[in-house]
Image (tube, rainbow, N blue to C red):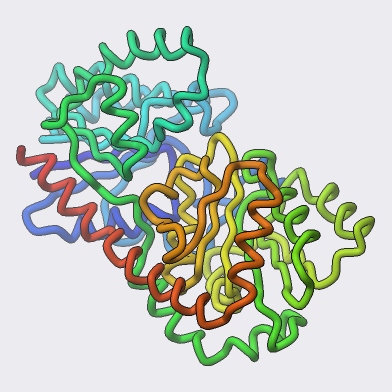
Length: 387
């Protein structure tokens, strides 16, 4: 079977999946990239610095970079204009083409051309219904008209979780077109890293200047409004001391965060800056609790998957898309109303108060995340191509 994958750029989370697809029996894969972000050093405006991922991104599968004629390459709709995808689809007559969403001009070219050449469209998006329902009714009405046309061109939809499934159902996608493809990271690599670093927790904490007995609360992500890192700082101010708070990341809110830490005289808070892919495991390894307090726009939150691979209890807001799937309240973590600082502080305090409970929650996280694998995604993609 011949499969084309059209992607914005080489995304560090999805590259391992591409390798697994390429290795599948009787599969011939070609990946088309619209943009070279991450492969070369490129400015990430949200991190506020240039980024080049430090893991191999182009190994293990066939790929081509399409010429992008956009004057301002980006992840926005007009930031990727790759007309070269049209002759590629016409010439190669793929059995199917896998698209990740509909928010790029190039993807719309695929929607137009693929049906004309008999290529099935497989669509994977991230949109959760919970976010969609915050839009104005008039906006949703217009989107229903657009999606009503667009979604009829799609052969199969790969939904990443429960909220994403509800999104497609809300916009009229029939059940026969829906296949579950759990949103996953490279579990095997992270499980192995967790095992390797397990006995080095005290050593790593000492390296980062953290007391050996202090439970560590961890945030990983960009310091932007969507991620709401200030909510975690304000919650930390309310909880009893004796713990440490570590922020891994960077972004426009960093000066505000540093000012708050200083003016509120918060102890044991560390902002360690942006860390590349090979550096991140150390921070998950020193942590005891993971928190993602994001608001609207956090369609999933794959850092939650990563934290669970390291056996961490997880606390997320109700707007974090993965919550409905990955967080079982009272079993491996908690879900709190977005922006509710007091409730967030309450959940953190509950976990800080009992090490045994944290371990039990963490073990449950490992159990849950084991089912959210890229191997399951490959099976879903193969099924989508056959049926």
